[in-house]
Length: 483
Image (cartoon, rainbow, N blue to C red):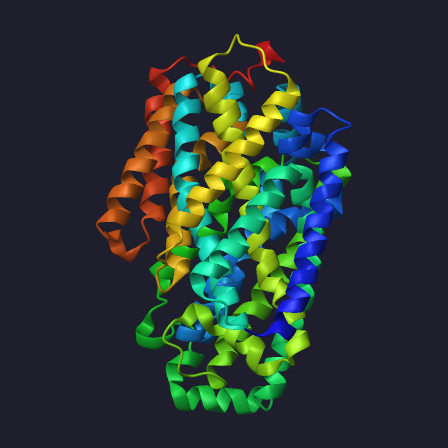
């Protein structure tokens, strides 16, 4: 075990817990339940940008993505830059309108917003169950990434690393709530940027400069320098699918949408778009390029996901390696706390409270129940991550696609189409989910596209066709008679 590398990580985790303690104390002075899940809608532009970027940038961006770039070369670096407009699209499409309606209906969860538009408990239940199921896969990936990071860098056995990382992350999320999440996202975002840039610089220096690295990559496999990669893996349908899955479709991700409910004012949105886009661009480019160029320094990895931890140890002094290992750790932790809080809010507000809508609970009791649910669910995820696959990026993309297939059109059309109603939304959600599950389960690729592409097309067509069979003009949130 590398104590000199572990020490900076311990200090980093101590700072994370300190911010969570501050958030816990702060929450005691306000509406606890609303503050626990959306921070009483007080985020400024910088915090909005950092929390969106840090939530989106996850184990796939720091572990899985660079692992894919290590395997497929510079083409994957180019492909990863498709993700640059994610903050712009999320805040641009949802943005002000989403936040205004969220305040009007006192919405705390995504299901609250869907109910405001469609007044259908069936939609709320289906949406809630979908979030819980999909996030089991998505968060399992994050726990695997954190454990692998400790295993590869500090020589802690996978199962022990999983327990240390998992328990620590669950505890700080459970007690800190949303306010701790956004404060830590800001801190972790800065750590990610610094760590990503310095790692790339160190790799280029250790490899003898860009020209020498490119020459060596060409010797290993000339296809590593092409846009399509080895065996033309990244063809047009794959690139198109990837753009839909990790760029346009991100608008439909619940933990991204919730961030759009919690900012303070219009100025926060404008600053958030600019700062968030810059942060995502820097981290995506530097981390994926590090994975591709790192093939020259370590060409014998059987598990591509180990490339970033291995490179950090190889190209940086022990103390510096410990400091910069906090970057991928930050990416993973920021995503887990966002998704874990989302699941907790869904279980407590959209499922638990809807069973007995007339029963009154005070904020303090609801917050305590939420903390308990967060801890319990986190424990189940640790168990789910006990036997990991070799490349976590595919499991993460599978969970992302399922959420997008269900939520994208009900969210977007609910904001911009006054005639959108519960019938159209529910049929679209079912059609998108069934199509995605069938195509993904049986590895069916229509015209070589990822299942998300036909699933979103079918979901949109189903929404439009089935909508006239419902109550025409009954998008309750946009209906002029309701405003």
